[in-house]
Image (tube, rainbow, N blue to C red; front, side, top):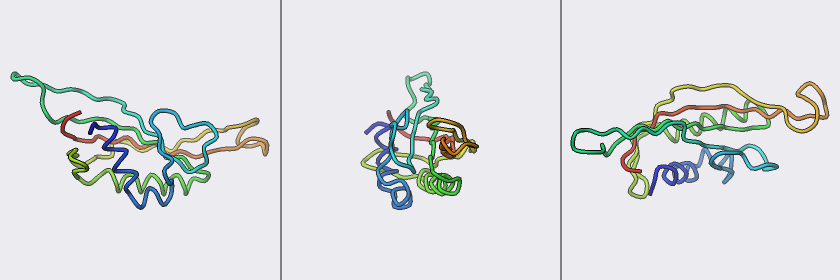
Length: 139
């Protein structure tokens, strides 16, 4: 199991996460027209440390989790559930994860549709963007 599969499995097996977002988790862009709330993930950096004998088995990967919601409270609740899921160390299906550390959290959002957030013809969606540094073993 690689990093992407392991993170996906952790989040989709998390009752607090799925209670809010269901199975709406994607890597990269949020699917157009998908209902909210939802979660998008992307690897921001994945250094491959090595020593004199070759690659090190463990490494730290920076993961960005964007928690989308119709309201600020919904996006914050999803961010809290994701943080609670990814912080503790665990092994899932043989993939070993160390403790995940929150490196940054940003309050973002965007206007979608026609118009902008101050006009009734547009819709504003809220986003909590959380950066994690996650230690893991293997790919």
